[in-house]
Amino acid sequence: MAYLIELPSHSDHRGNLTVIEREIPFQISRIFYIYGVDSSVRGGHRHHATQQAAICINGSCEVFSTDGITSQTFLLDHPNKCLVLQNVDWHTMQKFSKDAVLLVLASTLFDPMDYIYEPYQ
Image 1: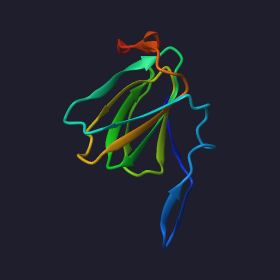
Image 2: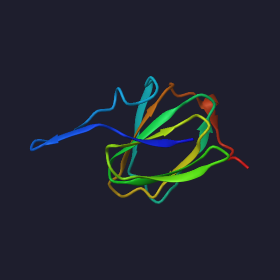
Image 3: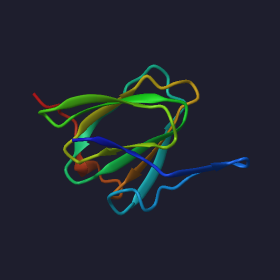
Image 4: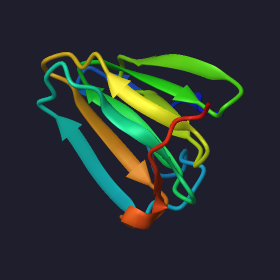
């Protein structure tokens, strides 16, 4: 099941620095970000193999996740909140604020055969 981790952040009078690389529980093979989202719902899939970590580095959004047994909605509203999605987590992303930038780190390169679009029953 998906879970949140708090990324270590360091702050002083110069600003904030948040560390990612040693906190993600898998090797990162792909990085992408989603922004400029209207009222659309994104995602709507799970994966055969890919694990993902999602960080809303600006603004906010919600991520709904279910592993077929447990369902939960996560609010990503701070750049030190990181949502780890396992390959079995069917998920959607919605309620993006106008300024939202959702950074996604993935364990595999893009492969259209890795996607499972049918939700759990």
